[in-house]
Image (cartoon, rainbow, N blue to C red; front, side):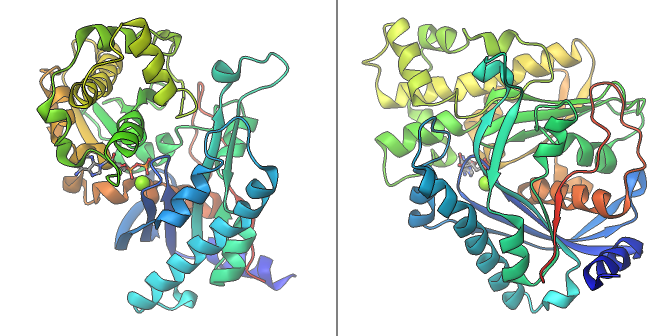
Length: 396
Ligand SMILES: Nc1ncnc2c1ncn2[C@@H]1O[C@H](COP(=O)(O)OP(=O)(O)O)[C@@H](O)[C@H]1O
Ligand SMILES: [Mg+2]
């Protein structure tokens, strides 16, 4: 037997595995690195977070990725170069963390790498009959495996698409396995670049649960801040938005897009929700000369409203709990704008579930890798593809 296959078999047979979960979202703020101990699999999965760090991206990294990120036309050579370079950069960040944490690579069983999303093209966005749903994450797993010396599972989203999904949100699987709770209607809300949530029904009926994107989370607010308030990368603590007033005409126009009418589940990205989308809405609502603070206040309200609308459509009059994660939960105005419109929701702290909210997405990828290695027995049904995700790369 090839020694790599033997090693893989040994990892899969272990009682518990140490897995590094990686997440790098559309915000391009940094690489989330969560060192997790995963016990068991399926609905008896238990995860302990041993270490967590977000390694902030330096400007060069951000600029390089932005040169191709969510653009319809790019330098193909740059795309090719970045596929390898991002993986090498990520590997360096992992290696540095392991040194800092005094953890040897031999102590880590696997890396679960999301990669860097470059383009997300569900059929609803590209609308070309000949083509199906598509998405592209780069930062190749073979390079990560070789440069860290750790077995790597990567590129999780392709299998989901191949099996009929849109490749996102994949949070559904880990949310269900880790956070389903009898007698509690739970919403796991993640506000990253894009806002998404998973609905976990109180009767644990897997056929009723789903994950969906709501629309933009921080992405338009971030892009606007970077354009008009450099060098700031985002509206920290909503300091800009708090000084403005939401403009109702612009707000109404921002919400006029077919995406918001589509049934759940659905996915989207900065390919649609970007500064061009904002400018078009400003032109149509005759608000092009609106001050920056008012635009930011409007964008903040827009994000809150589309999240509220999606949650109300899902929960109707029922009482439910919201567990928020992602960088948007640190935006006080955004959270206030959401909370005051949802009187039947109690906002709980995901830390009460022993999870650092900033680490949650990275942990969920560790759980997906854990399932690929030793799970695969949970029967997801309905629209939820029942597949093992990710490609396995050996370090040698
Ligand atoms: N203190 C804060 N105030 C306002 N926004 C914040 C704050 N901290 C983080 N954010 C937002 O969170 C984003 C990062 O969220 P994250 O969950 O990492 O998204 P992604 O998964 O897209 O990388 C930042 O770009 C910023 O918009
Ligand atoms: Mg991030």
